[in-house]
Length: 486
Image 1 (spheres, rainbow, N blue to C red):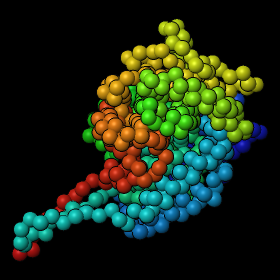
Image 2 (image 1 turned 45 degrees about the vertical axis):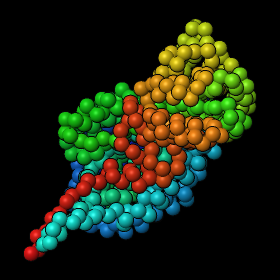
Image 3 (image 1 turned 60 degrees about the vertical axis):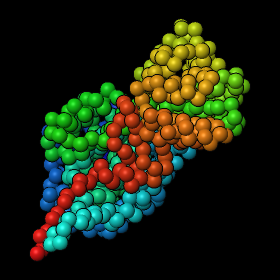
Image 4 (image 1 turned 135 degrees about the horizontal axis):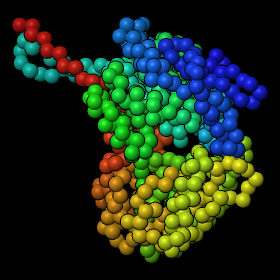
């Protein structure tokens, strides 16, 4: 691998800028959260090095061969990327497993999702069309969608490979060039992706990966005058900072931020199926998912029965290292583990009932593990029911009427996802129409892995949409052309 050297068990990586692997004078450590051990060193880019990456992307957009790629050629290139990802799926999954602590089967699944993004957008690269507008005789008026230019992609640590792919694929399909800033905690699979894109034949400078801190590199991207679009997934506070910085250059942004997503369970629902999915929706990726179903709103008449069912499912999940192929892996860092512990301790101190979990598991590991936790007996306006914990902690909130359920569901600053469980189609539609959320699932719940489905939030959960055909709008701008021929 051209970007990595090994010294005993420690690997040293380079950045990818202008089609070349680049070293820097400073590096930072990458830690395996399943063991707490350092596994790699990656570069810390300076502002000057970041500027070189942006310049390479701008030159490739303005003057390089990428400009002359026909849409069908971009599509063929993205198909090649998808095929190469699948050929390297096991290796990428192993990198992701070590970098994030994910169980191997989850990592394999997410790599396949990454491949699907390139496959999906390959198929639409030559179908991005404008329209004609009737004005009057003698005037031909039409629109065309054009790429924006250099796009910045600031990637979170909870799903680095597939989240990089979900924004890079549509950006390339529409003819943009990209600068990627992976999370400092989890950059390794993104660097592997750069190698694959290079092998597929993406022209030099079209894709650049710059590693380093969000405070320095991320901020420099957000304020750079040559960046024409920013895609960011992460916390609300960081999203605000990026949006303010982008305003200096009137740079458009797509922000996918936090969530406190409700699962609304009525007494007439299939309680067995709902309990299984509710437990899964808060424990997938150890609860480190923006759209995790972290609030359980349950009709009071089945409150006790349903909570017991969810508890049973949670207690059957296996906690362990990535190599064990467990159901629940570690949290990403020691700091995140301590954050989750602090929230649960707050609940205990305020009289909440902990049905299960509420502590670190008794396993032989120095990793950052926490048991799936079910918290009951708190108010809808309490800290645990309002703030995003980003861990495997589910809070229970009983309700008596659909109107009360709606009030609780909409009673946070977030609006990313929601689940509704009922056999009454009228109730389901009534609630789906009124919940303020980017996506609503009825008698099911998804954390947004379907590549065809537009994904994004309302309120402080973000602006814009990723995935599906909808994402193409955010990587293009409309140009109107009017021709007088008479």
